[in-house]
Length: 441
Ligand SMILES: NC(=O)c1ccc[n+]([C@@H]2O[C@H](COP(=O)([O-])OP(=O)(O)OC[C@H]3O[C@@H](n4cnc5c(N)ncnc54)[C@H](O)[C@@H]3O)[C@@H](O)[C@H]2O)c1
Image 1 (cartoon, rainbow, N blue to C red):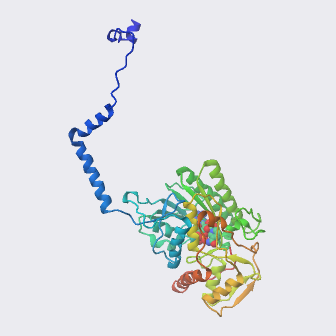
Image 2 (cartoon, helix red, strand yellow; image 1 turned 120 degrees about the vertical axis):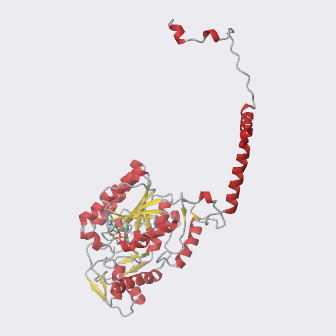
Image 3 (spheres, protein in one colour; image 1 turned 90 degrees about the vertical axis):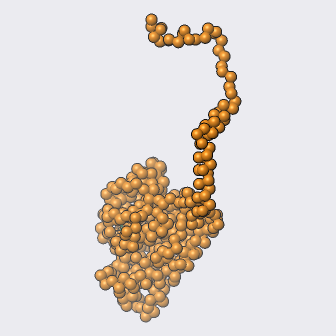
């Protein structure tokens, strides 16, 4: 009985013990497919589909030919008009891109269906000086940008021209608090950059650098986004190596008044690498050297903004110390280009992004006099604590691996900044009525 329940097929089995498989028909699958296609006019539909596709690709053969970086997962469009970016620079950049990155074929045609899909990108600190220029470039490239900013040093005016653009969102948020957003890339810039601002509340500065960076790395890990940290040349402290290479570990005072920023950024770099090694987050690290340009805070005490504002207001240019300490000055469009190349490229870094042209403070004062007012006076003041004596980037790594180098000289970039400052100082009296003491950052 039991065996009947388990096995009922015994009466249907062939009596023979030997097993003989069915003969294989070699063309069975092909003939089945052909019969299937011929049945119910399916073949006709296939031909109609092919005809429609051919028609579409003939009538709309291409999308605009964008620049394709060979190192890149994505396509980079060089926008036609970017506020404050000298046209000449854009042209140089677009040809430099092609030269530096090679193989973009200007005649290559990309079929409509393969047009670059915009990315979703968070820019923390995107309402600040550097962040707002970066946002302009990303939006112009066709990406969707979410700016996260607590407006400590940033201003809505810096990004106001994007209000109403469906690809732009602005969130008032402090990065010290966690945030969940679905994005592809995170540019993490949130942090006051000038000594006046980062010394204002040092504990908050270090929290922003440490807890803020942790939160953004946590977000990158959760949503699988690529993360770029804007670190600083300050990680080299008062350097004993000149110019500074990325391999130099720095000479930093851990307990000085600038340590909240210097050590904060060093810790942020450590966290970034630990998330990369430990959690597999894709990261990029930029070490930014002094940058200037339109939209800098007028009263931020950084040396270029100080001199420009003072010269415009017919005040003496204040030089701290003997004025022989050197800095290199990078125009903001050069920096933004470097940041984007770093993000899109294959290398983690860190990369020095700065202009290697070295100026003493006195030489800078002379350029400002030439540009704004040859009669502007120079006034010497005692130097500030921990002010580094020399700062000059070695950018050979960025040149070699990112195909990047600055294009805008101080004499070209300064007038662009001057016209922005002139308009903001004389056209808008609510802003920046006094300049504060400080050194360069
Ligand atoms: N500009 C330079 O010369 C320079 C040099 C080295 C490094 N950097 C780095 O580049 C980044 C941008 O610098 P910047 O010159 O545009 O400075 P910025 O002060 O103009 O911009 C910083 C932005 O971050 C925002 N922010 C600050 N703390 C925040 C917080 N806790 N939460 C959310 N938003 C916050 C500010 O409101 C501002 O919009 C910074 O990380 C800075 O350390 C800049």
